[in-house]
Length: 199
Length: 199
Image (cartoon, rainbow over all chains, first blue to last red; front, side, top):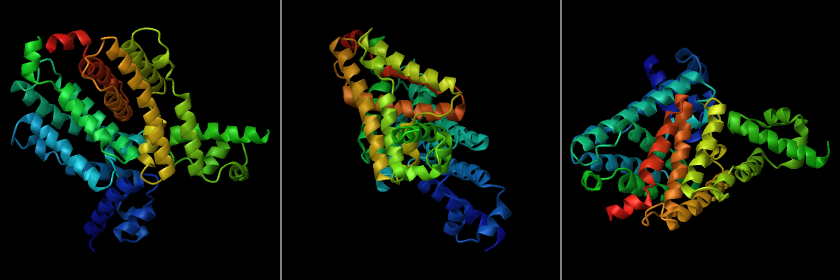
């Protein structure tokens, strides 16, 4: 295995172990064992577990399935719903475990590591930005009332999703997702027509 | 210090340490040191750190300031807003750290401990129930449109709050709270009058 290969194996294993176990529960030995590399090789590639977590968070953000959002097929709000349905399906497939790495490390580690906090902040901001673009598109197409602030609303939707994930894991149930879809798409994002009639 | 005194010191220290450090970062020695009791005394009172976490979560839920909700002073939605403003003020006072113990242990540990998952589930369910009562009161007083489902909406609001807390900590900013208040009280919970005019 070449030098690049070892580093890549460590990143992939860390992504998985941080996601499944959490940051503090996944020690360097747990990660190098999962990667199938000697523990001693770790510090040839990373200064610390903290530095590795930053790389893992960036990788996670880059792999996040935003393609349904920017794809351009179908109505903007239909794409937005499909995006969250796809994440929900992943969570159901994992029997309501794992959640979102950004939210998990945000809850567990952001208070204690500036670099991890910054990586979580950036990941959530990028996701919010992608959703804000779709909401602006929906608004411009008349599918959303004009008073909607795309960025604030996108941020709130991301936050509501992160909390719904924690709740779904605590409940081992999709109830929180059902409420998310009903309230975000049924009440929070009112259709342009209805809103026009209301004004 | 009597036997009950030691147990109580451990519970209080655990509540603080789990909240500040997280579950895995707060070992038994960290907790007994913070409690000012010998590490050896721990297992006279608790079978495991896991069992202690369940007690700490129950204590946290019992201490949660729901008094503004059930108090009966003022309009129901005004009380609901004051409730979240009070929690927000606590978070700002702690400079956007700590968050909510239920959400934190939900994100970090619920996947790995059935008893902790159940304690988180119960804590969030009790909080949701208290908010559902206020929403039902608002709806019956005509301050909310009749189509609102108090329990599903209350659950969503709690979940949105938990996610907003993670985001505020990642951002070290109150922006997520501002969006929460604007969208929950401005868009999600439409006034009864507006809704009547809309129907």
